[in-house]
Length: 408
Image (cartoon, rainbow, N blue to C red):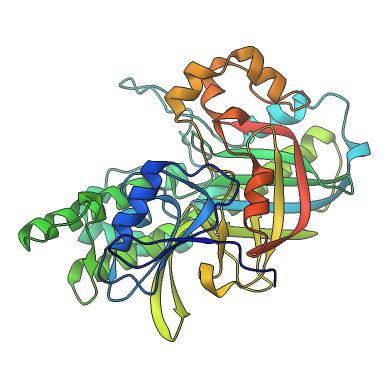
């Protein structure tokens, strides 16, 4: 394993080990990490990944191991959000000169984006009529969801089955990529969609109410927690594990539809399971670290146990990486989940021109309109610097460069 590459901060709580050398690390994110580090049930230290940036309640790019409690905001509301990538037996030479038809086929196969909701109008990012493959994929989720709805009535009026197999908005995407050997990959990024968001916001609110009723003061109200042994703790773990399974299946359904759409667009069969990775980066996991069984919450971080495969995407104009974990104990076997933002969405829309965005995405078949300026490459850290900062956490197996990018 390479020499450790982290820096240490401490301010009244457990240490914070950050793999941030050579990358921007905003003061707001530092303060959020210090707040988390003051929570009395954090095990050993908090780990910050090189894509770390300010989040809601808890920092994106943080790894928080806890004993006897869980912080719902340290997982966030995009529960189970993550990546999936598959390598095909196609090569670049087999792709057409124009990739517009391929992009159009993917966009038709997978609902994406979101309509401004007007009464009676269908949301383009959801199924109006749920297709058979989605109904089949929902079957193993349905019974557990019915149980959750009985306990939590707020889940009844959510987008659940009609969001399964759909992409969403923001930084969620579907890409066709080439690796360094000119082999074709499909890669996508999404999570538990509307139902996961409702689960997250519901339990964050419940934790806050518990803190108020118990007169517990926190460094940040969003760090409200659920103690192990309480009813709400058990219900949260049950709900979050269900949402994580929804997210995994969601990616599987979308990938199958992408493969079918591209086969039809190209008019040829090809194998799309040469290699496959499906990993979360917003989730809770029961793990063993430094002699204790702990709950590890990764918010914008990927598990990187020794030999474990993961995905670290760049922005829509940059390289992405298929990686293999090095099992670094001090990061709690974790690595970054991407490049990490350096501009808020509103700032990116103000600071980056359409011309600059088009130049940054030259050679990529993708949206080049003002609606995606908040996702332009300049809004993110350099993925190369991010990878250099975590060279003791993962090793690169494949380097991917997108040629098609579908955004919500």
